[in-house]
Image (cartoon, rainbow, N blue to C red; front, side):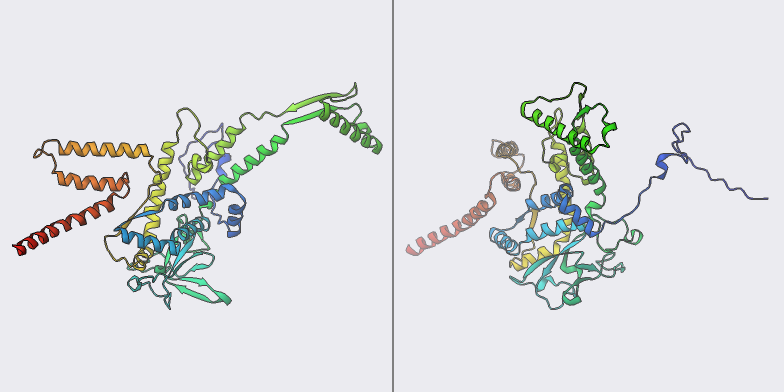
Length: 451
């Protein structure tokens, strides 16, 4: 007696449309992991404007306003001078772009050590000790063995990187000396078989199909423009006489002359038995089709159409404000969750190279959307009115002590940036206030000695 094994499956099935059956047209649709080669990535980035924008725009927006250091004015100036000397902003932007394109890039922190394979000792960096920073891609920087020690800071990441040098020589670099930009997070290197283990995926890996569809649609529309108007002329016995070479020559001469006359005076000369007809292609709706494909590209790249295409939003009551706000929130997340942790050691070396060792020094990423003068004035007025309500007009009846409100108001105005230079002015005012009692004591002492 044979055993009968029945396989049961719960699904939505329609015998009419063949949905859910073995003849369903979507039954053969599945996802396959195809890794784009570096040559394909370079070709897409170099020859098509959409892939270039998808790679460049988020990286550029994350770096264009850069960051504001919070410290005393001499410390800020020293750190910013080091940033300019080393071109930190430009190097981070370059590494961010290449990381998004290739799925891996790094900024090498050069402090002149003899053995870069050893962990970076930040405390050894003296004034001017940060000598250079260089950008490397995964093409030059191969990831070594993955660290599987759960007690290690680098667990799940390469324990060493190998830089291809001159004449086939390799240089081992410890990961603490690198600011890593890994593009899109890979699902699993061991399952996908990523040839660049230890790095991420290219941003174009998941968006290139949408880009190809948009490019193909635009190309087909461009070709259709040339076919938008076609002249059709019916000639008696045309096919019967095509075997005659003299006939073909005469036909070409005949209609070349006819088109020339038409171009000069707008009159098409034809024989009485010939028929003339013009067919025009319908181009209405092609813009909507193209924009639908562009919307798909925008969604795939997670970049608003207003930013990707550089156009104003269309439609009734459309401002694009919510789209840009969501996009700016995403860029801020990239800055705070990806770039800032990766740059921790570089920033520590930067501060020490600028001879700044104050633990209270920190920075904030500058807002991507800058306020207008009118908005600054409105914020200043609202903040000042709120502080006035808390303090009140009668001394001794304040809801919150006047000094507390004053300090909080100064902090808020400094953070909002509505009064440039307020922080430095308050600090200078405090120094003068501290000196005044000393001067009064000196004058009193002088008077006492005179008596």
